[in-house]
Amino acid sequence: MYAIVRAGGRQEKVAEGDVLTVDKLTGEPGDSLTLPALLVVDGDNVVSKAADLAGYEVTAEIVGAVKGPKINIMHYRNKTGYKRRMGHRQPYTEIKITGISGK
Image 1 (cartoon, rainbow, N blue to C red):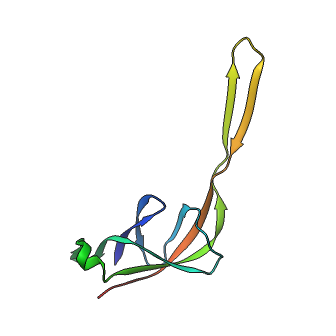
Image 2 (image 1 turned 90 degrees about the horizontal axis):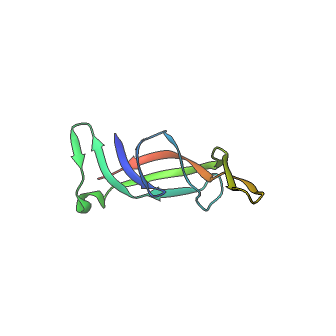
C-alpha cells in the first residue's frame, strides 16, 4: 500500500517505513504528525475522491533536523571593486512514515 501525500509544498509518494526529507517542521524528534493524503493505492484499489480520502490517515514521526547542500552566491559589479560572497544551507526535517490507515 502506498499513498501520495502533500508535504512541504510538494507531493511525495510514500509507503510505510519510508524516510522523507521535507521543509522544516516544528516539533522535536519523536513527535508524531499526520499528513494529508491526496491519493491512496491499495493493490488494485485506487482511492482519489476527497470524500473517500477523509477516512484515510497517513501518520509520520519526526526523525530529526538536517541541512541541505551549501549554495554559494557571488555578487560582482564590474569596474567598481564590489564583490560579495554569501552562502546558504536550507534547513529540512527528516520524517519516517509510520502508518497508512484507512477504512
